[in-house]
Image 1 (spheres, one colour):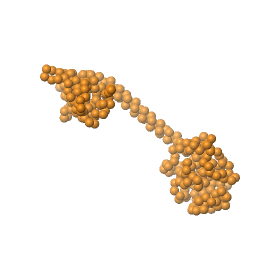
Image 2 (cartoon, rainbow, N blue to C red):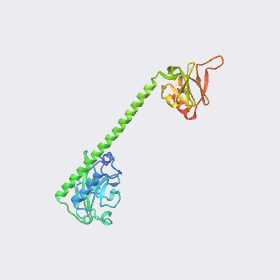
Image 3 (cartoon, rainbow, N blue to C red):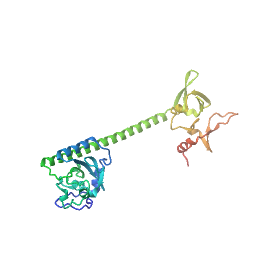
Image 4 (tube, rainbow, N blue to C red):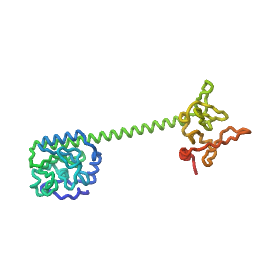
Length: 316
């Protein structure tokens, strides 16, 4: 099992042996690092400071190379500090509350930059934050610039607050997971609806159009192509031409999506009526051949439609 980072042991302090890779994974599963302040964690550090009688308290998360503060009161050192100089690294690894009454007199911590230089910390008490799986991810701690000694009641209160922090982390994670599952479900529902609508539209075999104050049934299989003409649309079906007051966009929603393609802002063609593609035009079999008119009609391809059209053709 890979050990924790090689920080020197603290004399007289029993430290856990933890797989650091798994510990960091447990921490990151909470998705808590670098998130904005939240009232519940701010309330817990205020309560810890009040109970322990210190001006400063923090909820710290121990990342790979830093300790990051989810909440703090009375601390002016920013939202993170290097892990290698943090007291919380050791507090997190301790079997129980790590309490140092006077850091300046402790042989291990007295040379720590936070003790020697500003803010010249003297007292530290930290309760480890232990996940339900048994991984330490940080501490809730009380800090002062003068020596202190906690009562047993204060130490027990700090243990309770540590469990409260973890409980709220668990609730927060559960809420995030529910929100993510909700987003996934909504996405799946949208996909299902879109698929159902596509299948429905793709299965349409006829449309009704207004002609001379009546509704005329037109089988979509007979439609060769559609042409926009100002505020009207010409629908060429077999040897018939139907002129309808509508828009290309509206008509496009009525046609089976698997059988028709928009090839130009003015043209929709039936895919199985395309006989050839020449330069920037599709050649459509109109089915309207007469002795004066050929049944093949070149229809221009708009540059913005060409890629989509080609993607739908069975190219070799």
